[in-house]
Amino acid sequence: MKKRNILLCIVLCIFTLGIYGIYWLYKVTNETHLAVGRRTSASGGMAILYTFITCGIYGLYWYYRMGESLLEAKEQRQMPGDKNMALVYLILGLFGLGLISNVLIQMTLNDIVDFDAAQAAPSSLVSTDTDSAGQDQD
Image (cartoon, rainbow, N blue to C red; front, side, top):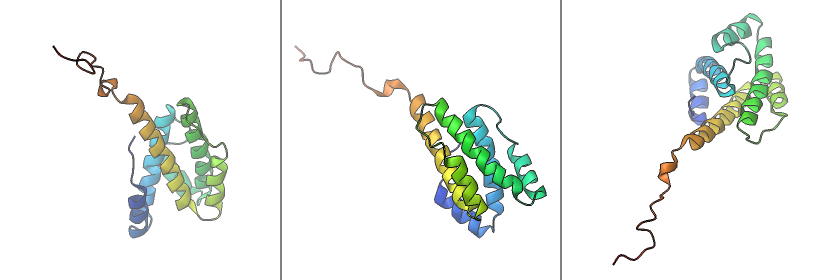
């Protein structure tokens, strides 16, 4: 999983007229599956295809599924999570504010990446040298 600069993602979506948004959807879908540890919906490529075929209806389902999947990933890590975010993503998508949903989803993924990095940090960074710490040398 990769932590992404959200502002850069928004700018790229705007300047590429949404083409980067398609790539972003692909990456977010697959990285959410990695965060959960299993596939919870269609793969990134299939999600894009289904969204095009259904004229965006699958995209609404996708928002809801990503919300549920991210909540599951946070619960696996014992991170606090809001059970209503899936519904928030869906409602934003219904009102044409899918970019905001994408930003919120990426923020959650970034939080998970940070949490995983903190958990994987080696404990050797903490000094355990007690021989010279606080003792006078003769």
